[in-house]
Image (spheres, protein in one colour):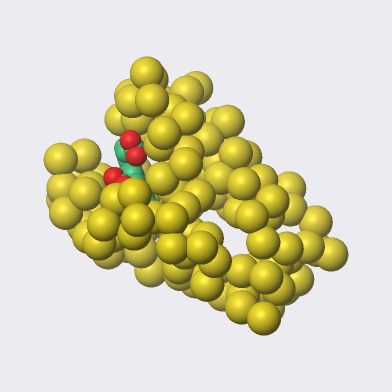
Length: 126
Ligand code: HEM
């Protein structure tokens, strides 16, 4: 059993990412950064990445190659406010996932990873 399996596999990752992306179009900071013509693609890329990181299928690598997340975010204006907002929207989404699917231990591990990556992706002072 991988972490991916323990939290319910693909449907759980889909729900987390769908809940996150549902908030993006109306968000004043993040909305303008994401490609309106390819929101479905953006959604898939994040779902693939998270599923792969937690032990699921290697779809991200197959489709996108090495993650190189800092490089892939370099042309976006990722300041502290953007990172805080990303985490806020993700927290809203995670809060919708029931405890029966994502218990405290798994939730905390996932959150810790997201906070760590978000901090690492900051690439502008303001
Ligand atoms: C810190 C705030 C963040 C901002 C402002 C941000 C913004 C963006 C934007 C605008 C995209 C392009 C959407 C697309 O077309 O794919 C993107 C892609 C992506 N982001 Fe973030 N992101 C942030 C944090 C994170 C975090 C914390 C993770 C992982 C836990 C993450 C993982 C990804 C992945 C996997 C992609 C797709 C990369 C690719 O395949 O090209 N991002 N992000």
